[in-house]
Image (cartoon, rainbow, N blue to C red; front, side, top):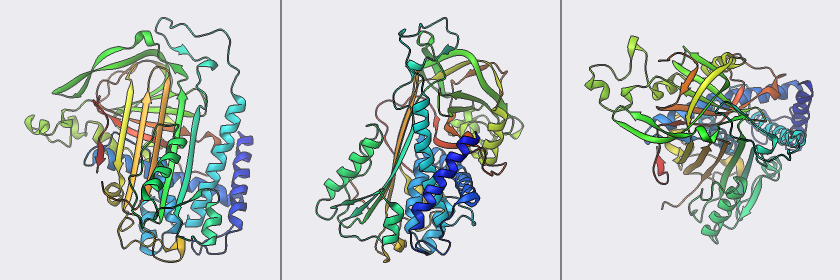
Length: 491
């Protein structure tokens, strides 16, 4: 573990060195080279802010108008950090509030921490590849008798793990400040937006498709000819379960989306040892499904089923829609309102080492979302960040750049073998066109899910006790099958 901590220190040092050439006070008065223990604290502070942001975004997107089934908080956070680089005055203040950045973490420090994380992820991905066992030669594993199936090294897909990338697309007629260009480094690309807006949008979409292994193909609509900047983050994850679900146990089962609505879904089943607790604080079962490598896991939160999920159901039963037995709110939306960073931190501590034998029933997942993030972010405090009055003069030295669109596309698929997830977020100027007995976890009614990356690699970092020791990469709510392609979720 100490070796990994040194890896982080080297990543921080590299990021600090790359930022050292940036002119003094390029972004704000707190600019400085960083490095050392202070830089470690910067990374810890950034991750704490990301956790707060992630759960706030999940609440707003999943329970707001349209009810998006899936978001990638990590992707949205990083894209907004790019915007923060050029934001000034009240626009900067609004973005800092939206991102939940603490007062002591300046803009330059936050961006240094972002670069440090990127370097650390790249180094860890390389170490993971080197550590991967050689594939066995004895073919596929038998299905077995329905007990937990051990994963063989050959079951792990190639390119397993997480990869993320940021890119700032700059119109040819726009000149970024030299210090900003130095800070962005290779994460920038010139676009002939004025000459051919459609080709420029196509180039952005091609980059996103490449970064997400073709899972997100169409992110940005046609750009306006006067668009100056397009800020994009893309993320792609692939992982094999540490204990996969035997296919011969999967079968159709009833899923209760609501008291008056049910559907048949492919239900995966297995019996095995998993971290499992009943959280009194959240009022839900919590089950952790780990992936084979890299410290990733899928956390499932299953609240008691509530008829309040159906509008008017509570009134028909002569009770408040806000409460269940004993005044405790029921249902997945109520769970999300209780799920904040301290609650998640407590839950992850409780889950650590809480392995027991559990009979698990979980649907195959196919979640797809196309989200207009502007109203979501405005409800989170974004202020004028997407209005004509916004101030992004930090990019060019003039007030010119602006963004009126923030779109995210995200998808997550999980089957007996493992899971794949992809997301991309862009900021741009666009042209309109109650818990039962343990030992059984049966997810046959709406539940929340969080795809996490444990922060074991940061064990040496200072961290607040109420900050979750994990990054929330993807988060959503499974309310039942949705036929056909996912519609755009206008929030």
